[in-house]
Amino acid sequence: MPGYAAYLLSRLGQFVLVVFIGMNISFIVTHSTPIDPVEQTIAAATQYGSTNPEAIALMRQSLRELYGLEGGLGAQYVAFWRRIAVGDFGPSLSAFPTPVAVLVGRAIPWTVGLLVVSTVLTWILGNALGGLAGYYRKNRVLRFAGILAMAFHPIPYYIVAFILLITFGYLWPVLPISGGYMMNMERGFNLGFIMSLLEHSILPILSLVLVGLGGWFMGMRSLVSNVVTEDYVTYAELGGVSRRRILVSYVMRNALVPQVTGLAMSLGAIFNGAIITEQVFGYPGIGTLLVSAVHAGDYSLVLGITSVSIVAVSAAVLMIDLLYPLLDPRVRAR
Amino acid sequence: MTAPLLEVSDVVRTYAMGGLLARHRTRAVDGVSFHLDADRPEILAVVGESGSGKTTLARMILNTVTPTAGIIRFQGTDLSRIRRARDRRAFMTHVQPIFQNPFEAFNPLKPVDRYLFVTAQRMAGLKAAEEIRQRADDSLKTVGLSLAEVKGRFPHELSGGQLQRVAIARALIPTPRLLVADEPVSMIDASLRTSIVNLLRRLRDEMGVSIIYITHDLATAYYISDRILIMHRGRVVESGNARAVLDNPQHAYSILLKRSVLSPDAAASGGAVLAAATSRYDQP
Image 1: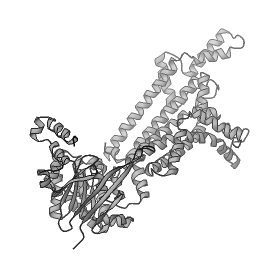
Image 2: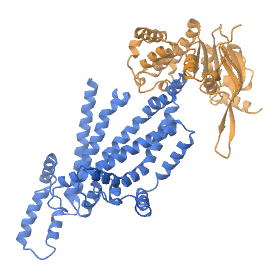
Image 3: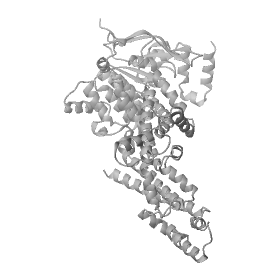
Image 4: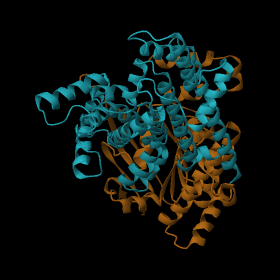
């Protein structure tokens, strides 16, 4: 269909534009901070004892090269794009000389694993419960579930996380409280490692699910209670279509359309890392990496993480835009 | 003597209102009775303001809302006995609804022709694909459309007037005896109203369908209906031959209703007539 091709092209154009603008902003922000990574490195290197000025000048020269900071702003801008094109963000400052790409690549599986599971789980649970609660308004169990989900929703995340930590780490110490897997354990594809991995992920996932559930729940419940009053649902009820079928293929199906967008947005945002979660549970993901990069003034690492998340969020939105016409015929027509 | 097509006797429906403490019951429909003859198709207009109970009455006739008291019989069968899916479907082949908002009458994620095909299959009991298509096309032709025009279209791709006509076509597929039309023209462009209203009249005359026409619009009610029920706060305050009632209303509320229809004179003198009528009505 030619309509879809035009749609595809315009969405691809938007994607490129958004990424371009986002990258520019991160270039501007990093290049206008007062923190100069080169001077910081030199300061750190010369902290203990004096070095001769020529050596310092030489060091400054090679560091500027490494960070892509030679020449004027224009030259730096060109160098910036050249580096992005090949995925080279230079060496990390705080973990010199490990390249940024390696650090980010090492952290991403942890974050993505943790957040994909918890986001998808929260989404499925929240929508299923919310949908049922919106459809069976008088069911006591569902009402109670709703109150519970909403009670957790406004509690600040870090408080829920700490309560879980205290409960399952100290009062009733059954779960590990920190790290991605047991320390000193050989990483590999074996039962012991996988069990340890799962065990360590329970608390962070639980905390994310508890706090995130209420939002999806309330959203879905109000969407469903709007759809339920529509006449095509009444018509289906009149015609003796079973309540289960009405709930699934009439009510939920229609109410889910906006929720799918929400899911895609939160899946894209995964690449920002769950900063607080990873801090509280000592999880070795992107969030932890980003925080330490900011503390260390590790400019190229910050830039690397930002670039990855700019591309990831826009790619998620692009993907959902491309899939949307399959879900909703109203988008197809445009 | 055959059983009347529809017999509504002393029907009451109450709803609990308010929160936990200040709970009170509202009588949405309060002791309404009327019947429709089986051998003489007619258009019965049910007129009243918002909240007068007309939609609740319609829903009870369609068997989606159960009366708190009283009995509704369709061709002699008590509607409260119809509970199983198969019985409901059988009931639906005789009684079909037409809704107020045509944009809500179809699932936005399904093409509208599927509704017509499924109705032909499930409610008219047709099997062969060609027969189903033919029935859908015939039904659409009755309302001035054709299958070629709506094939594969989604609800958002049709206009409100077209959709409402598709909804009527859908209702006609199982050749029903009774249509319950709840404000079928209130969401439609004024220029298209007459065509829908005329269509309803043609259905009565040519296909022998009885129609319960629910509206707050006295003009169209006067134009097409044979009999009229005027409802106010859940009660029928006046009923009878449509022309007789509307030409010479007796009950204070009917008089008010009639006065609120803007005649060219009244329109010229602004809301004065309406205000006068309202103040008179408020004082017992």
